[in-house]
Length: 159
Image (cartoon, rainbow, N blue to C red; front, side, top):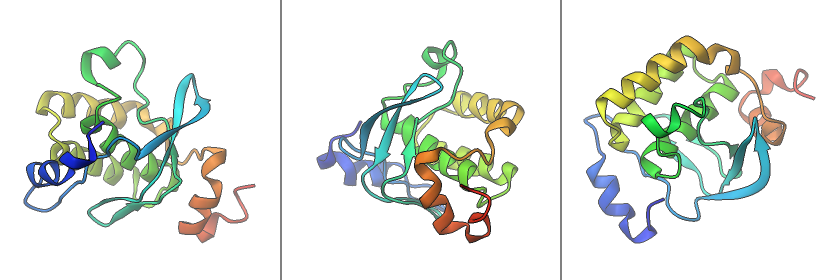
């Protein structure tokens, strides 16, 4: 994670022509003590904003959903450069606020804004495009109240 004192420098460094992404810092994600498919879960302690997307405070995420053997090759899940775009993508997938393809395109732009290398962006983009449909729209029980707050049409569906 990034130290809070470095946040302004990093925000400036990772500005694209359209979007600024403020990377997560130490303390922005706190462990919940629970696991999702073997991966530890974390609770967001502040809103995370990118483009027109606001991931709310208290959102629970596992930060990434890559198969374990790919992580060391592509991803450093504890580094803000990787976890910040992943949290945004998790939120979009759980809420279905954007269509599947748009959610993946936003992930690509967020990774670019965060400074993820182009080859890593493309591999992750292709992986979520080909294998991500099974997770699209799946809501973690911890996030049901947050998802209901932005998707009133799901109030009767989510128990």
